[in-house]
Structure formats: C-alpha cells, structure tokens
Length: 75
Image (spheres, rainbow, N blue to C red):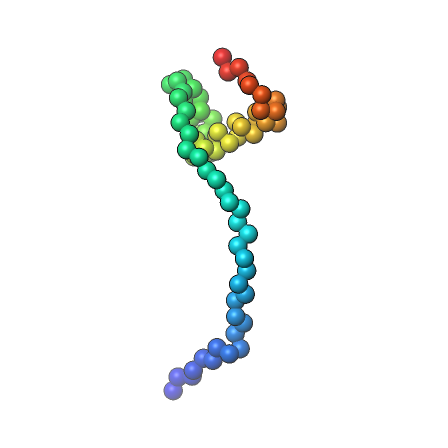
C-alpha cells in the first residue's frame, strides 16, 4: 500500500520582487583592418576571451581609467 504525501507542512515560496537592473544594450558596427583583427584575435586567444563585446568592454574600461573618456589618437 502506497503512502500519500501531504503538502500542508511544506513552506510556500515567497514572492520576491526581481532586483534585476534594466540592462540596455546596443548593436554597434566597427570597421577594423585585417591586422587589427589578427591582433584582437591573438589577445582573445591569450586571455581566453570568446566574444568581441568583452574585448570592447575591456578597452572602454581601460580608456575610462587611464584618460577619462577623452579622445585617444589610435594611429
């Protein structure tokens, strides 16, 4: 004979409000040379990075901390 499981002792889950921030994403297009692409790929392989967006995020963070988002001459 099988026993029946009673649910009245189980705690009900509390409805917690989601605390996720609204993350607004944008799609951007970047035109780079073949040499720049090869260099970015080398960096990605060396640091085990799989997405170009992570490289861009790192580059923006470096610009922010080093020069306060001022124009950097990349020539």
